[in-house]
Image (cartoon, rainbow, N blue to C red; front, side, top):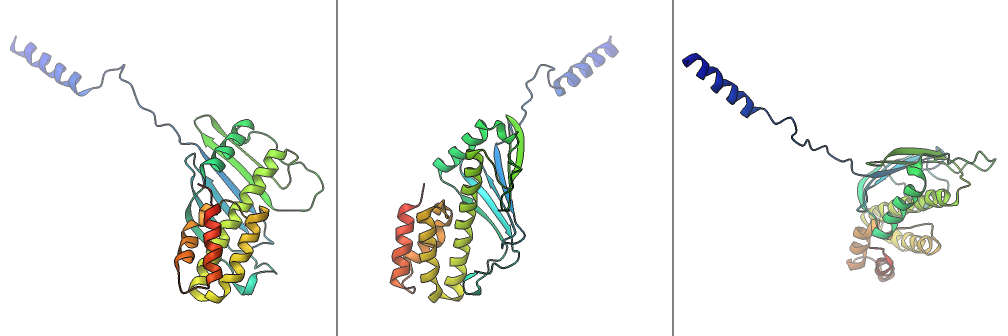
Length: 226
């Protein structure tokens, strides 16, 4: 009898340690992420990658390549590796485009005989699945426009790095550089000014830089998306 009681106690103790078979197991849901990569060995940077999350947070990395013949004043942008924040409107549009194009599970390249502009790769990973496509030129207007927009975002980020370098090493060169950025923002070659809000705020408040630079920085900040 005593032996049976000991067996029963041991069995109950074992069951207490083991979870019930029907207990719910929580499986982590993959957070959606869109990754854009650009590659063109003739440019500098020759390669960059931007990852974007639904809340607009992202990360940008670039690799310096062959300096561009029109590089201004010899101010080359080194490798970049930093977090960025995109606007809610832009981010929503990017994910909506991905959804409308089966999360990029489709042929993007046109295979048309057009000038090489650089390889653009769009990829999505999330709870709905994953997909990717790569193209130089796409006949799909939305895909082509998305590639152009991301190139314009990268241009803004790189311009921000140039401004940081000029502020540190050649403040007198800021006037020409920020004018160039303002023109690019006006015609769409630079988008998502919010990604360089930090350096623009520093310039707008720095009494050591030219008044025109401060004014231009404030003007760009006023147009920065949220």
